[in-house]
Length: 401
Image: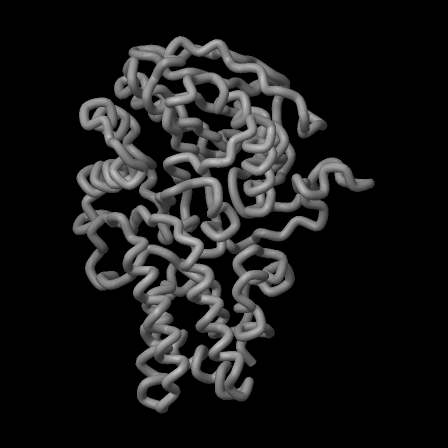
């Protein structure tokens, strides 16, 4: 697929559950080593859908030269559209799927949009030739490069979807259908995408985010239980629907016995979260640079790294900054940190029980290269929405040295 189809009204898919009250639109990065999981997840979906709860999924199959859009129906999966093999690192076919999916149900249908497969949060998120919605009509804005990127790896093309490309896919889809309001939920059945940078990039498209800052359990989400309980409870708000997802995950994957932590958290997206963090950065920027960097580095070294050493729990980092600022008599920094912590704590909808030793983590990470920029994030970090809006790169630039 070579076009964004800007200005072209999307054609609805011929779905059978078009009157469903809830619909899940799922982008599945199956062209890789996740293929073994797709069939069990499709089976779970067929056991959980109903007249009130529908699932429409875009899947790129590695064993064939085609991709499919499938609808999960009770006891079967129905392919509603076949197409040539797509690249899940290219946002354009994803945008087309989302646009068509959003108009395939009733105006009253409430949506959750999900990404399924591998994820890496803010890491490995560089593409020298990103395909972006705001560059759609610029010369040379054609195919994405063949570098390994952040999310949904495509084995055929050796490309992944960057966070900015994910934003572009959503922007293009919402624009084509004339949608101004966010969907209920944006969720990640992927690893490491519980990141403030990811959420800030995609913030305006959903009321609530559900994701894990850790690895996700190998079996992924249990779709049967989540879809089934959605049909039983009929949640009246995005918060209630997201809370059901977290509660199901908590029951299915007991962190007390799990081999790997998978801290799933539902977070209400508040623009004030970024604004409050920007206020903290501004206050820190008012200090002598050596003092500001030293304070953040010392706080970071005392904070929990999540998978990557420089992927720190956001709440714990700011709490450490607040404590050190108070000890040093930096009243402005302490007050700015307290304001952010208040906003962040109000934004948390629900979370699974933490694994022993991980209590108190908020399930949302931020890049803070306390040991130096080990993963070379700094080369592209300035292009992310979170960095542009907060100025965080000024504080942590060059690995806090």
